[in-house]
Image (cartoon, rainbow, N blue to C red; front, side):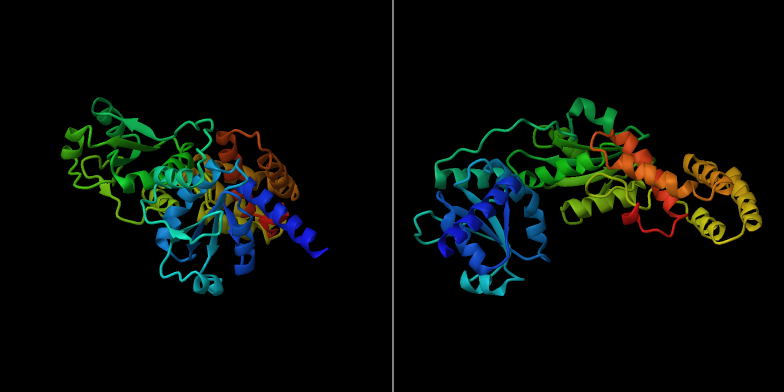
Length: 363
């Protein structure tokens, strides 16, 4: 009974692995069972959660897993060798990330020592297995590809904040950045005044020289009102850091999945009024409403007017805020909702939560 059970577990695990592209192992025994079950071999990334290079590799490695996820005989996996110390000890891991190829015949493992861009990793796995990566339908890019002729029209538009990557085709670091930069553009594609673009400054050398590009990739933000003084980005090239950078510099409020942050739409002064309003009697609420009306007259915007509308409706019906919050939450759970509508509903819901003591998970 033990052998069939083990086989069943392994089959279930690899069905899950295939669905996700990259299988996450959680211990030495599970890892060894997985490697033995890979009929054409296994590539394993040994990483640490605190490792910056590991975070940079993560989206590339995920794409690698997806490229081979329809071939169940090839395992693309990873294990936190810092958390599971017995793993690091067994395979003598000296640094992170370490990539090791485990041949299907049980012969000696091979440490991967080439470039960590998607093309190089794909070629390596293909050479070891004889399997070419399966072509998938191309996903439309949200990155604007610039040329010399279009650069000024797009980048120097003073109504937009434009992030530009200056790259070269032969640059390994640029190739490594590509999937991260694509995801960054997707995060901000619904921001009307923020654009993510790139230009081959090796081909269009005149643009590179004009903007003092000395190495690849170089990333610069051309902000509204400061087009002649672009800000050079010098942080790490993870999706999280680049998203935080654009949020800070442009006033956007995006999470790394492209949705609005819980702070989007919120006005701290009106949040304080909302707390005061909900904790008082009707007479006291009417006083707060007058303060809100005065504030919104002096600070008129789309969202301050929405706050005022909420105060007025809540004064008439004390259950209106809860009912409206539940309605918006239900809409936002629909997968078919358009991005523009999702942003609008999410900002409204954020504002409504300033009136509620109920946690967001309960809506």
